[in-house]
Image (cartoon, rainbow, N blue to C red; front, side):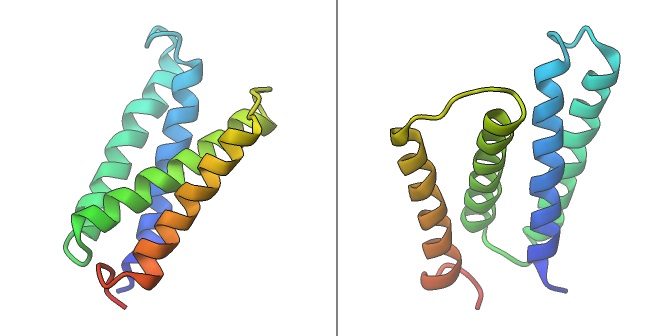
Amino acid sequence: MNPYPLLGLAIVIEVVATTALQYSAGFTNPVPTTVVVVGYLASFYLLSLILSQLPIGLVYATWSAGAIVLIAAIGTVFLGQRIDPAGVVGIGLIVAGVYLLNVVSDVSVH
């Protein structure tokens, strides 16, 4: 089975959990807190399955970078947070790095 769809799902679940963290009020709001805990557990479970097929460095770099980019977009579009030009360049470098690691580098299983 191709591990990349599972990796994409792990990223989306982690982003949902991180977004819920914004609303958990220091783990005092039960619904967002539950989403955080269940989301992180599910995301890490999927990562554990993916690691049987891909190297840990590749998986973690892709997972964390995907989450960074999506969370930055959510913050900008839905939460009214600003991103300056340097931040846009930084996010572009993250995307470029993940592309190089997954497509160009021999680290990835092609």
